[in-house]
Structures are given as structure tokens and as C-alpha cells.
Amino acid sequence: MSKEVFLGISMISPQQVEAMIKAEMPDAQVQVQDLTGGGDHYQVTVVSSQFAGKRLVQQHQIVYRSLQEAMSTEAIHALALKTYTPETWQTAVQS
Image: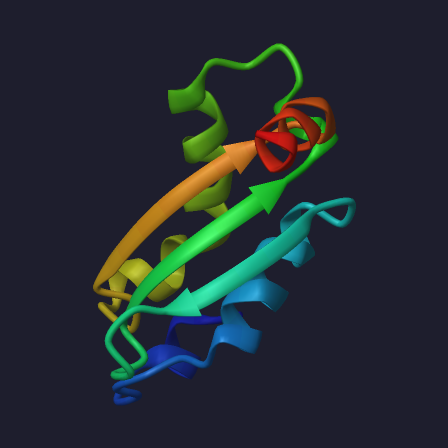
């Protein structure tokens, strides 16, 4: 998406956040929660095999890259991330 898409838009839907992440990470399972109802503070959980062998900060950088334009225009103001490989996700949901 171009920067112009976000200019003047005060909110982005959870579905748009999911679509932006999946555009960069097609294998990802993505859950998006709007934390305030204002469309600019999100909690996002991403499960992807692309995270295998990467440190947590590297995993987050991958997700941030997919949302860079929305964040640079402040269409997304705050983002809380939880990232998992498919294996670590299975462990997390079993606990």
C-alpha cells in the first residue's frame, strides 16, 4: 500500500492490519485485537515458520516491516506484538 492510502485516515481496521502482515508473510496465522476501539492501538499475535531460528527482536522487526507505512503515518499509533513459530505456539496454547 502506498503512503497516500493512509494519509488522512484516522483508523485502520483489524482486517487491514492482518492483510498487511499476510502480504509480507503469506504463511502467517494472524490475530488482531483493537485495544481501545479507536483503530490505532493494536495487539497482534503472529504465528509463522519465518520466525524459526530468529531472536525475538528479529521476529518483531519482520512484523514491523510489514506495517511500516501505516506506522510512519501514525495510522497505527501503538502495537503490542506476540510472535511465535508454529512449534512455540503449540507449547503456548497447551500451557
